[in-house]
Image 1 (cartoon, rainbow, N blue to C red):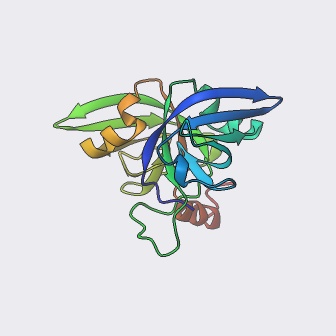
Image 2: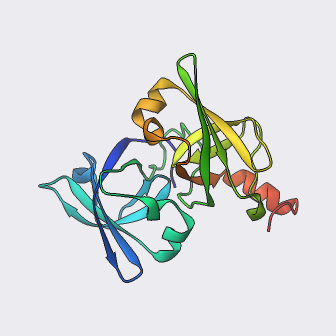
Length: 198
């Protein structure tokens, strides 16, 4: 379980295919605190640490083909920055919202607009999967807990403050960027009970 509050940006240093699996090496100052089998969210995708190299401050996680098909991990390149968050501790403050680390679908950034020191990002997604947003509801974009504005059937916007901009991958995002979405888990249950989703 995660909160959507990003701890730091990691850097992809190596990508290795093994059959249908992708082994991803990430450089991060968090490496020394991680343990083998620990869960870490990478752009909102919960992945398990399988190896560490403390000398190079790197660790390795593995993504299976299903994860690559449903997320933006297949678009990653060496040198890319990714949002990192370790699993929350029981008893910690829930500063974001309840995030599972299970991506529902991807979306495309269709607009980035600066507005008086903040930025508005608009994302478009496939509505056929029956995921929904609501105005002022919670959404996770690349693992970042955000508030929905301009909620539409297949799109929404978020407002990014300077702190979030400089501490997450939003600073590298542009028109056409593919992002991971995790819709609000409470909203998903309500939608299922109301028969609004599959």
